[in-house]
Length: 187
Image 1: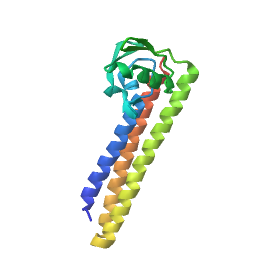
Image 2: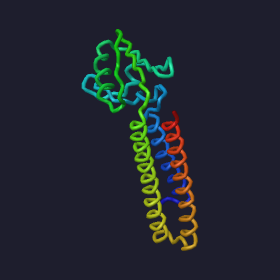
Image 3: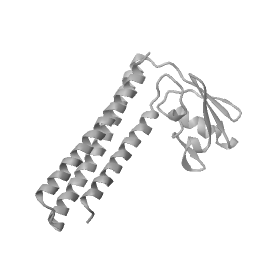
Image 4: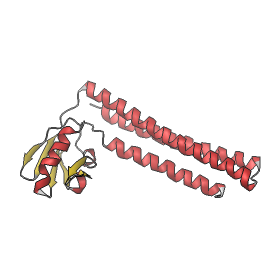
């Protein structure tokens, strides 16, 4: 069994991973501004394999409301265009050779509110992931107490440290959620 300090370090790393995943997902929710992260992880069917868009071409934001995708393989242009149309981003691609232009329409108030709900859902998923890490680590600490003879006081102290870690990470999730919500609601 691992030492309790190592368990806490591992739990912190896993909680950081949940926070990073949330940040990536929030980057995929579009605000009124064009940003390459909006579409870079979009899955495109490429020779029968789902492939992230950023592996099929270069993505740029030449203007505040425009994204361009320079597709490297001419045969993949229609697949990229299809994936963009089928995404829930509400983008309408215009193709010029191997360049796909994506004008970013202004968000309606209703669409902004829908996206805020999406942000809240993703934040709650991240909180659940963090709590799951806490629960698993608590189980490991209690198991270590039984198997390795850790004292009740030591176990209690480690559990309190774990709770502090959990609270810090949940606070960061809330901060990320509020930041993205403010981005979405600013006009």
